[in-house]
Structure formats: structure tokens, C-alpha cells
Image 1: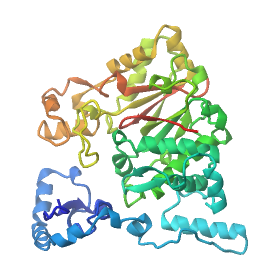
Image 2 (image 1 turned 180 degrees about the vertical axis):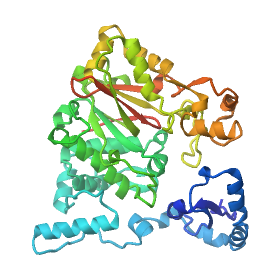
Image 3 (image 1 turned 45 degrees about the vertical axis):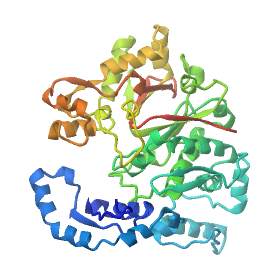
Length: 469
């Protein structure tokens, strides 16, 4: 609206001020006016308190509207916002920097301290991305260093092969890991992944990568014991996951306190990557189920919010086992629960989403023993999904997820819930599915030969891409 010449004023809480300013910059309206209505988020306040606070800023709104300059709004454009370092931090940094010290260790320490101060590091020591190491990393792909793989939200960073290689070096990756990262970036840039929401949410959303195919053995990815780390067996998993996090920071502009507004954060956001243990999977592996050949290698990008271990040492019958597993899925405090009742967030993803597209996937990681028990008693993966969908239900009165709590508080008159589901507010004891359909459950087999599986409650669609080596 501002760019089209319509005077606009944003209403925000103090918590989101920096985020508002940054978003305005990257959308080409760096001077977009706003008023601070409250120090904290408005949804935690009652209607009367919200009304009083809004009334208290009316004069400020009038001042900002009357000071509007159409020419200033028209003068801003995305083309002017080339360097994210300049845009977000006001930094003018040359393409190549030299750090000097009494020895190499001292120089390396200065580099790390500088990068961390600038916000470019994840808190762990970085490998210096020297021209030699970046050049070696680029040998892992046949693609041109200047090829653009994607334009990544939230700050529309241009993800060239070379930029991915730089961050891969800093994370400790090897050249053979680069094709995995390229495919991962292609996956998270898919519009259905809704990367802007994943990156900027106050929930601890993070990309989670599941790798399938021959590349797993070839580069040494861990699909067994402690495949989500830490330690030497998961070293490849760790550096690939870490590289993707650095790419989100340094290419997409997803920096803490600027565009990453996570309330508490999560260790998962450092690194979240594993391989499927296909040799112990009694069914089709994930990538074959999703339309790829078994001899092809793929990366599937999930959105992880919270992962919960499901320990079941003694259940030997599929139905009781799946009932207990479904109870783990029914977590009313996770925003993905019940999200299928929600409206598409057009500010996050402007594409024309169909109801079936606006869905979240739930990842079920079965340990080999649990998967084997189900398969030996005649259960196929589609049947397991059907059972989970049947059992994973919760009453409306529990307010499943963000949409459920909005339904309880505002009834059918709110912007979160689709019109066709507003009537549920009148039936608080009615049980509703946690996820839209059986197809919302994605199942892989991984981990050690124990009796502990895992439910990864996340959000958005899982996206699979072919790894081109």
C-alpha cells in the first residue's frame, strides 16, 4: 500500500520494532511509519486493555499519516537493497578480509570474534573461508559458482553456489557435502515450505533434513545410533545441518533479534540433519514413497518445532502401540496442531493456496524394532498413517494449537480460523484431528535397535529435492 502511494501506519509492540524496521527495508519501504502500541504482544491482553492502548496512540497515527510523502515511498525499491550487510547492519565489508595476529591461531581467534560480533556466526568456532578452501569446496559440484540456486526469505538473499560454499566451509563441510546443501536450499525455497514464517516465527521452527539414497553411505551420513548427534558417527550430519543454519543467517538474513524472533530458541536450530536407515526399513523408504527411484539420492526438508521421544519397551500389538504414539502427537501447545483449520497467512505466503496445500506435516521416526513389530504383523505404512490419523484427536475445548486457542477465545469471528470450521466453537467436547489427513504423517525408520521412536511436531509441508552430484 505504501509503495502504491497509500499512506500506511503499522501497529506494533515494542518486541517487534526491530523486525518491523528490517522488514520494511527489505520490502523496499525503509521509512514505513509505525506506532508502538504496547511493550509486549497484544494477544496476551484483554480486549479492553487493547482498546485503551490503541486509543492512546491515535494522535501519533494522525501525525504519521499526515506526514506521508508519496515520492519517498516510490523512491525505494528492491534493486537498491543489494548488500544485506549494509541493509541490516550498516556494514561496508570488502569481499576479502585479512585478519592478522601474533600467529595463525591468534588471527583465527580475531576472525571468529569479529564475525560473532557482526552476527555472522552461530556461537561455535568457524572455519576461515579462505579463497583456497572455498575453491576446494566448489569442486564438489558441477554448477557455476555464480549460479543462483534460490532467493531466500526473509530478506531476499541471493543464494549463489559460491555463497553456499562459503558457509559450508565455515561450518566444517567437505566438498562432497555441497550437493546436499544445494538440494536443501532448493527445498526450503519452495513456496509451500513458507520459509519466511519458519524463519521469523516466535516459535522455535527450524529446517530438519532427512537424506535418502546412495549418497548416505558415500559421504558417511549417520542413520543409526545418535543419528541426530553428537559425536564422531554424526559428524557429517552435524556439519551439513550447521551449514544450512549459517546459510539462513548469512544468505537469507535470518539473524536473532532482527528477523529471527524466536521466544526461547532451541538447540535444534544449530543443526538438524539425519539419514534414513533404509536397510532396516520394512517398507518403502521416504524418497521412493515420494516418487523417486531407490538409486537416486534426495534431501527432504521438514520443519521441526519440537521432537519428543516415544519410549515403548513392552507393547507388542500394533493398535495399542499406535494409540500411545498418537497421544504424543496430540500436543495442544504446538502451533501445528489443528493448523488445518486455519486461514492461509497471505502476508507470509501470497500464493493462492488451496486448503489441502495449507497443511502441516508431522514426522514420525520409528526405531527399527518398532517398525519391524508393525510390519511383521502385517501393517503397511498407509495403514499406520490411517491409524495415527484416527487416534490422534483432541477435543476442541483443549484449544489445539494456535488456531484452536483463537477458536476458543473469539469463537467463529476471528481471522485465524477458516469460515467453514467456525461452528466448532459451539461444540467444545467434539474431538478434532490433530492433522488434516493420513497423508500429513511422514514416516521414516532411523536410530539404533532399541525401543524408542520419536515424534517431530513441526509445521508446513515437507519438500523433497533430488541431490545432483
